[in-house]
Image 1 (tube, one colour):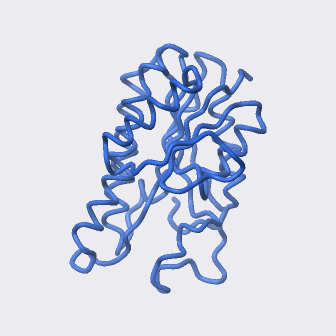
Image 2: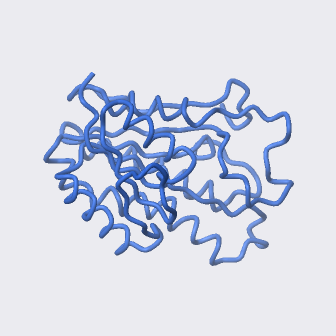
Length: 228
């Protein structure tokens, strides 16, 4: 396996992003975090709102220059706005698209000059709801289906220059569900993956030798309801 190196992680202060930052550090790499919140453990970071393209681009450049380049990017930042289309405020609905889809594109675009130099790897984080649609999740499904299409096109575009992996995780035991109405939270019997187990798959994808790529990874609990 090749060295993991400098890995930029969006959403690295919580959930899958935080688990990925920890896993990268354990693998001998240097996690660089972009998040609205403060990551723990003194991880190198810049606080930024990924719904704002200028903030996202500036954060990527600042961390890349500080670290002397990037070897990988993991776009783990994500938000949700549950409810029927007519019940979710339009601003909240559109913010899901801006953070999950446009934020992903902004970060990858800004990171590309560094990744081309290092022949690095991008791991985008979609969702099982990026390939299977459910009710009361139009914003999230639209954004995550978008991430799937964006990543598959990006893989074709960057073939031979930058590695591209599409990660499709199922539900995980994180704080992602905390702010939801009770009816949109996983039930008491829900089987959810530990984010650490999904992060291990991310590090596996990042560690592939040049010219060998994990194109797509579905990582979900064995009883995941939104797969297949």
